[in-house]
Image (cartoon, rainbow, N blue to C red; front, side):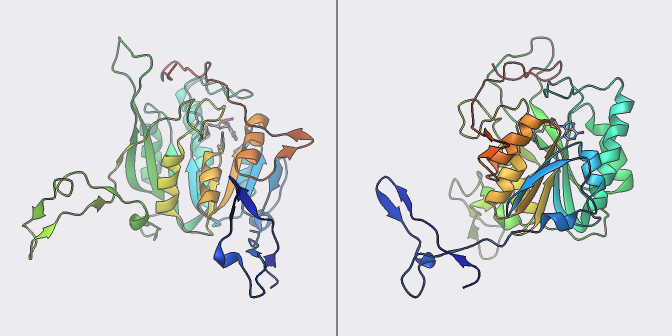
Length: 330
Ligand SMILES: C[S@@+](CC[C@H](N)C(=O)[O-])C[C@H]1O[C@@H](n2cnc3c(N)ncnc32)[C@H](O)[C@@H]1O
């Protein structure tokens, strides 16, 4: 009984929802209390950053390079990295623009090496950046580590369309691990998608002996189509480059297991942590902007107020989100 605690009833539309697993032998409503993850044990030190955590999510306010340096080596299962793309987005207190491409790439190399150091030997990293900068990082990572897959996230745009060049409607994602000898998690059965060809037309595959109907599901390829996050969507947050939950869901389901640690050094609106915790993983999210840090505290359910301030979701349209290279919808 040590791990059990009495909770209140959940009442929705005058209906009381009680899961039979939550009733104990005496007929009382009981709920298993989650075992808190020991986040502090992941760190060698905790200087120069602010943090708050609950049983499965830690939000950190600070420069991710300083934070990553203090995390123990070989300790995290999955890292999703969505850094500033060096295209001039406005992140409030930090500007997404470096003087030269060389300076941007050398800054990226610093946190890439730290991410690999803290990654478990069988862990995986997914890295995003702009189309024009990915080739530099791909070369660096291919030579030093092990590229598993080159993915493109494609989306449609109903907004402003370029009349001078072909519009930019994809973003590259590099999936890599420590070395070609490293084992890694790939839960392909958890990410199956509908097979649209033969199965849809109820065809029989006569190449098989005996002939069989075509599979109705398949493992996705490396071209991923997910809508970008729009104002009317439930998941929308006031962040200029928020990534869709569906994208993170595929990554987290494929490359981690329940109870694993998922880390995002550039969390923004904390999409990674929000999805990871929903999927039973433990999440660490870092951002250097205090508004995004507070967004993360709220979005991942760590607290509803911080330092006396109520954390409430207020939706504002991303009118200032345009950059020189990538156009956002109006
Ligand atoms: C591309 S956005 C991430 C968006 C995020 N994936 C989401 O779904 O909302 C990059 C984020 O990195 C943050 N950032 C920039 N430099 C940073 C640094 N050195 N350390 C931590 N966060 C940083 C910015 O404040 C911004 O929110």
